Image 1 (cartoon, rainbow, N blue to C red):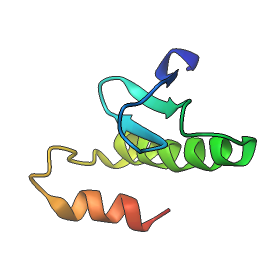
Image 2: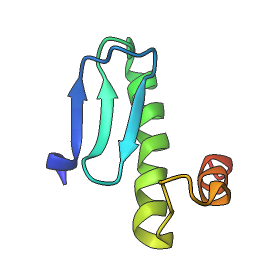
Image 3: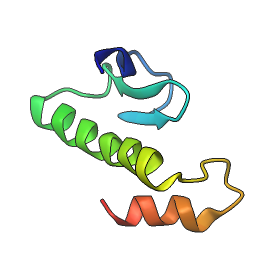
Length: 73
């Protein structure tokens, strides 16, 4: 839902991120076009889907899980 997607200013140089506890974050100060917003949101939504569907282990205990979700994008 819309409560799981947040637009914030970010201190790092990333355009967005996914956190299993909080949802998707879009970095307003690094997304300067509609296409970047759309691409970043789509990328992070794949991570959200993988988390819900495949129970990805984000704690880096199994780096294969993280590598697999990055490779699928």
